[in-house]
Image (cartoon, rainbow, N blue to C red; front, top):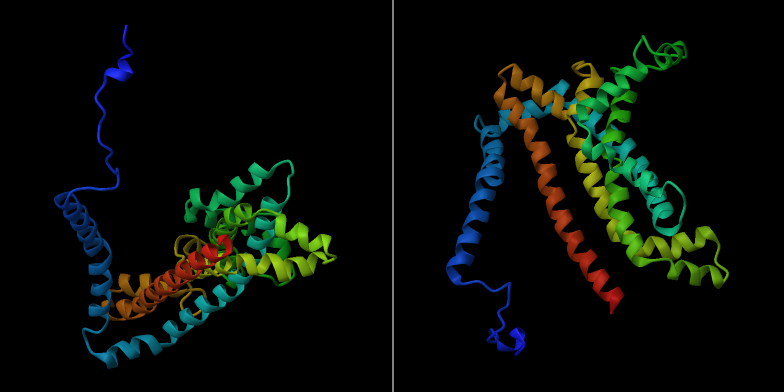
Length: 290
């Protein structure tokens, strides 16, 4: 009896990635329409509304005392939280990628926790921990340390929602690189610090910058967790997103959109830097493999 597989007619090879011109045009049209509707048009609308009453009105909204206070607080929170997340991210990625230990999977799950928890819930956690009815709150207050409705609470909430960015960027990168370079450096007499500074850090520099960039953008734009712990004190605990919300609720649309352009500008700068880092990161990987 003849083999059925031998009796089937041979089919010509077709590249699965090749499609006809109509299908390609339809796909590109859907993508461009989606981006224009949900990304470009809202972004353009922000800038149009911000400058609708002229440059002078825009500048007055930016230099208003409460707006300046929100800008300073946003920058302060980012300056504190991003370096701390950088240190944590490098340490966590080093431990997970370079060593084998019990609980590694659980540690990775904890790092991913802020991605799955609502920022509002993370803010409520700090309210429970440091409120006047908790154990930590009155004890810290006896030493003159205010956490809730103050800068420390805003920094803690921001750190919580942003700490996965650096770690999750570095973990797969360091796992892919393996431990061969570090083992070679140690076998040649390098210390642990020398190995990290001259071997590990150059290998992860582009991924590290990429993670820091994303972490900084999220830190400056965080709303939910900061809103819960800040208390919305004008001129004191309002970051830029919170200040924009207050202006919007007061129907001060021009000032709200003026401050929003600063965050929108940050998003555009982040996008440009992200693209540059992706190009450099890809070129560095290709050179390393070559």
